[in-house]
Amino acid sequence: MCGIVGYTGRKQAVPILLNGLSKLEYRGYDSAGVAVRSNGRTEVVKAKGRLKVLKKKIGQGEALVGTCGIGHTRWATHGEPSEVNAHPHFNDERTVFAVHNGIIENYSELKAKLIRKGYEFYSQTDTEIAVKLIDYYYKKWNNPIEALVSFTLRVRGSYAIAVLFDDYPEEIYVARKDSPMIIGVSEGETYLASDVPAILKYTRKVYYIGNMEIARLEKGRATFYDVDRNEIQKELTEITWDAEAAEKGGFEHFMMKEIHEQPRVVKDTIGYLVRDGGVNLSEIGLSEEDVKKINGVQIVGCGSAYHAGVVMQYVMESLARLPVRVELASEFRYREPILTEHTLVVVISQSGETADTIAALREAKERGARTLAIVNVVGSTIAREADFVFYTKAGPEISVATTKAYSAQLIAGYLLSIGFASARGLLSRERRDALIASLNKLPDQIAALLKAKNSLQKFATEIAGKKDIFFIGRGIDYAVSLEGSLKLKEISYIHSEAYAAGELKHGTISLIEEGTLVVGILTQETLAEKTMSNMVEVASRGAYLMALAFEGDRSVEGKARFVAFVPKTEPLFAASLSVIPLQILAYYVSVTKGLDVDKPRNLAKSVTVE
Ligand code: F6R
Image (cartoon, rainbow, N blue to C red; front, side, top):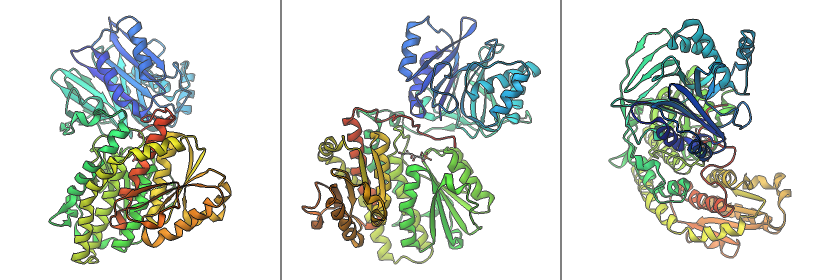
């Protein structure tokens, strides 16, 4: 995790660095720091805690005047959150400074080597080892590019690293492997950042720096090199996102803003592939022939992306009649999976930078499978490495708890399932038309659900003091339970579990006590009755019930303390509606408890370490 920024140009660096860091705080907020070339030397200011603490500290000290600098917001991996462990880190003489996102895996071995060479260490971070290793090579070669080439060849792990050398006062040197970094340029100015929103205010022209590449950033210019020191020519990419998309737009929190964006996101994601009443897979480079060769689908992802995969498994198996397996990326990568050239491995990721998902994608490619990424961030590692890419149209997602990206991933799963079913000759025209018509209704149905937030807000205040909450359902309702439970626990800090309703009796039911909240999801007509029986069973043991059902479902009447209704839709697409009240409920519980909704403790938006 962590976010890095850098600037060299004609303006004052500090406001640009701090503004960039504020857009990256979702990546980590244990500490923050900047290093700026100021009055002929490099000044470092660091602070434990949120960016606002750093801002205050900078405001109170002597003005950091200078036009070149780097900054960092940290999610602690090596070493506790503290000022000493905060970035930037530096060499003993304070002439080389670095900020880093990623993990240096062979840090112990490198530290031992550097200690033998006489280096001492003041922090517990792998980044201090990285900067001292760069310092060591810089002293050896007397050239920043050579120093970074040697660094790149010597370290194992992941890094996006930006380095200031006092000998090159107006320049920044960067290197990257497996952690995100973009370089932005405008007239006389150059920026670097972990993510686009950090520089969008200043430029829309960016370069993507590749793995094991190094760059020299001068004012208004970036020069790229490979590890053989060859200069690499790169094309500038124009970012088409609206800068507004990364702002709160009048909402108190990004999460609520992003919840409200879902009708648009769902509509745009549907519009990406739906053409002339059918699903046009050629938009993502897949031909009918490609689909016909597939004899099995393996889905991988982490967290909510995995949960979207669980929904996709049900929908794909039902429509396309292909065997589908869904697995956590962190498990898949170490399982020695059996894959063939006829297996399609679908990797799902909002950020496109999740370490385990990247590793799973690489594992799948190595084993000869074809790979398709459902990914949100354009140009991310996963997008660049997969054979086929389905770009979800969620736009930048800032809140750590995903909402709109998950909804877009669901749509991607439906569209691929319809497309595969059509290519395999399994969908009648009537069924296909009915499915597309149901899809097209989803944006308005979600918008209608958003208008009915008040009752959920009220119920949230009733349950905010609960200690344990269980979400239960069968089939797709179970898949949604997984997401509802994660959403609630990650931002409200209430212990919560999702259970396949039929499994409760096999042990977990002993946890039900007087007042335990059990949320039953009941949209799958053929299964709802059974789930309702399980709800009645737990109610008789003291559980406090909430039900989530389709409008017009009379069977829930009088059974639960609170019922949230969602508009009726094709049951295979029910997750797109039933997840909305669960997102809103989680949001209001977090707000009721006065917690930091957008930046829950211990978390970061993209998990770029194992
Ligand atoms: C939960 C959440 C996480 C992510 C997971 C995968 O709200 O956001 O569980 O879904 O870390 O991240 P991506 O999709 O970026 O690979």
